[in-house]
Image (cartoon, rainbow, N blue to C red; front, top):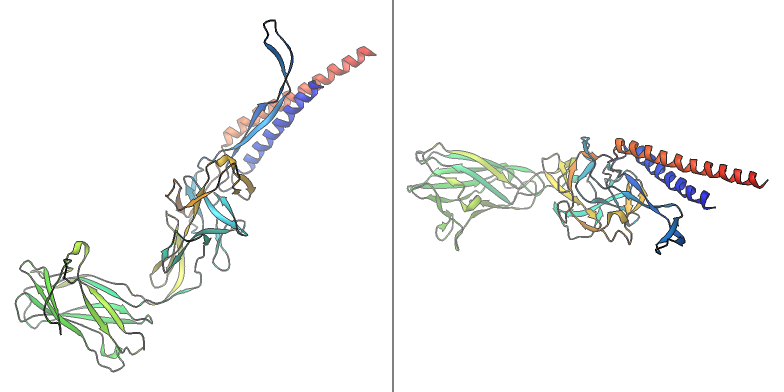
Length: 427
């Protein structure tokens, strides 16, 4: 009888709504959880007649579940201080791999496994773009992200150095102004390079000499790299004249100018590779970094690109998802970058549990990129996105669903009474 079947559809639909609300409330503290709302739609209608003017008289058959909508609104971001925790501020999902099949999640409560792979709370590999020698390749296929725990960063020989200095034009002849830079060979061994400046015989000239300690060489003899620098009346470096050069060379960025001095040292005592270093003379904008003005001779800054070996210490994740490892030698090296993804239709995603989603024909294929591109979120390290469940709204919906369930249950008992009365009339 329709009198029973109609309220039964209401009981079933509102039972589903109550289950949805219960699931939302139980997950209100689940990282990255997105709440759901059950929507109803009326069932088919039966025409039982028509009015005098031809309008149909129709009777409904009850209610059905139209959808269980997911709200992908942003949850609050709470700081945890844990470098493996990552939150997304904006649209998109992290990409994780389940035996080679990509899934998507908002839950960034990651951890490192025994081999340094970044994994989700349910053990799936977090995917991203690989890095080679600190350079991330976003054109490469996605790979499981790995942090080099327990590993050693190989040393790097110095290949460039620079110095920002002033040479006092009032310095007396024969007075040497020394400056020192620590450089590294291919084995990571440090060497003190001493750059000595001496006023030249000609006005506005300084002789330079770059040498390593004699003890650093197998022969016990240090052969310096020497030459002459010339400055104009404004104290700007204009030419260099390396020892053995055919003629002075103009310093600058124009065609035919030079911007550096080559330094070469061979026969090191630790049997490392020969050092070949470029001493850069120009700074930002092509301005020489060594000047000669009437001020005390001083070195304000030195820089070189070599380093000794270093032990892995920690890592952090930048706002663009780049994972950077820190080493005991003070070096930082990028080891990968988180991949983010989004789909054309969020409601079409399939819920897998554990905070994971899978694409379907309804959702469309995932578009994968990096933070800040293609409308994707920015990344916040040391934080987690909380559930977006609104407890006040859920309790309000709970009351409405409860009342609707009770009303349908009352309809069943009422129709039962009517049916019983009808049977009693027959008897």
